[in-house]
Amino acid sequence: MIEPVQILYFIAASIALTLLPGPDIIFVITMSISQGKKAGMSTASGLCTGLLFHTAAAALGVSAILYSSALAFSVLKYAGALYLLYLAYKALREGGSFASAGYVKETDLSLLYRRGIFMNLLNPKVSLFFLAFLPQFVNTGSGNVPLQMLFLGGVFLVQALAVFFLVSFFAGYIGARVIESPNMGKHINRAKAGIYSFIAVELALSHQ
Image 1: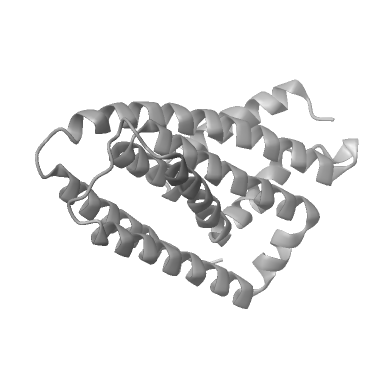
Image 2: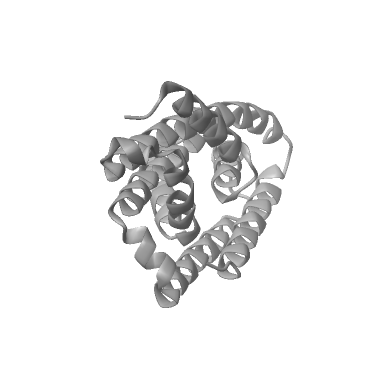
């Protein structure tokens, strides 16, 4: 339904957008440095799982409702901001404790996966981004626009997962060296809290 050249353009644009400094990639980098590459990959997997919902919402027109409703947008963004502030509080509560970058419990990985999903779903800007981005690469002459958008969303998800996994690997490598320094756990937990708080404020102040 979509020309191969158009798909290549879409992949190139998607990679560029995924690499731009934003809440998702900052979240992945933070978790990879603080808890290792497995933690970053679990977080990335959760974030990308959330993209499935945003893709479906854009294809089925649900995102358009969010775009037209100031109340729905506000409720979702403030819920996301509160969740991020909760994560900041949790990071501060950890104090100087620090998980080894080389070993993360399976239960922790599952928690990070769910945390990634929640963070993505509670960010209305992602839904609006998909609503604006995907239609630019849809071939309206080929018909079945929702199916094309679902396909493009799937392609975006795959490239995002690949990019995030690579970022997790390198950030985890750096983190494994950093945490060898004494008292570094306390500083990194404080940095995590600051990053979560910054993203929360940015989300709360965002507009449609």
